[in-house]
Length: 246
Image (cartoon, one colour):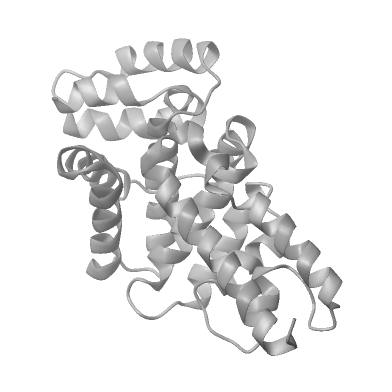
């Protein structure tokens, strides 16, 4: 499949609004004959006509947010770029990943991308479980070079806020990437003082929240990432079972 056909087949609502403008600018540098005028017309028609998030919408949202996080520390580390490419190959296969990374390299060159406007469009069009999955991926990018800067954490926190993700959800996903004595409690979104009954209730709640079926509409490729979050929840619960003896 050619790059231009991949774009047409993969993207729904994300071809409109501020995200559509970013995509249009990126496409102008990677697709011959893709004019700004034609991009703009298609953008508005698609944005108004389709509201269901598809795999391609998630993909493009991820590329833009990833570019923001990677530039948060003022430099582009090759390990972070490699992580993005590796994840896309794992999710989409080599051909589709090559198309996505081609677009990504053009997006990351853009300056003055409005984090707020991009996130508000995503929040409006994307369900909460899918937004949680975006956040999980962004933490993976930040951790890819082995060192997470304060700027990267602040940027991801800002993105989470604009996406309508609570501080507890933010800390839960963050705890999946950074070890500490109370990680299991943070992942389950409870305090150390929680009773056994409260731990069990929290586990049921989090297992439901992070269940892979929540992102089934995005395709099997994105369920794999959701499965990782789900395993982390199970692992946290099993750890507390051993520690508390229940």
